[in-house]
Length: 196
Image (cartoon, rainbow, N blue to C red; front, side):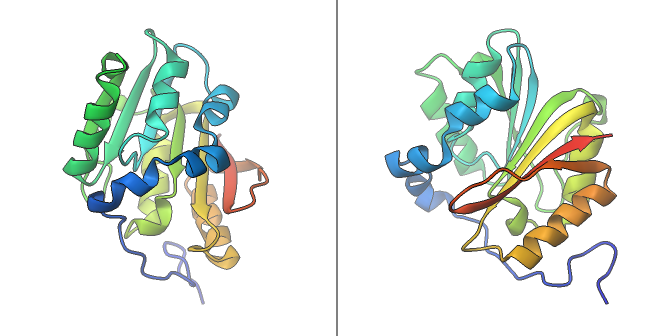
């Protein structure tokens, strides 16, 4: 029987290393994942955005462009090297004034309690399968979102079988994030969740 806090079909997934970060920002990946379209669809100028597991900033760049000077993107990652790469990439583009980087702990986003209920949107892109406690991650995301805020969650289909993905979505629901859409993707499994 599955524990209410952890998925029954959980596999151990390794954290993607910063030493291979170049693979995360390729033209082919841009074609399939379309960060600009994702930002356009789910964000507005002035939004406050949480980018969980931001890596070298593949999606962060599009989020920062979309929210504009009045918005804010919190780029959160476990690896300092990933945050350094993000900063080196976004600084020449003039986007860093819109971005706050934060190094999280392996077991927590570790963001200030003052940020609770202040985010319009959160993105957990290709990262949930890497964290040791997905239930806690979704609880933290839910606490950080404002009521009605959106969480876009996706994981690669080749890494995360359907049963595991469904269990993550169930954990999100238990955290107070209601499933509102399952966008189609050729290579990934995705869910749009809304905070009640």
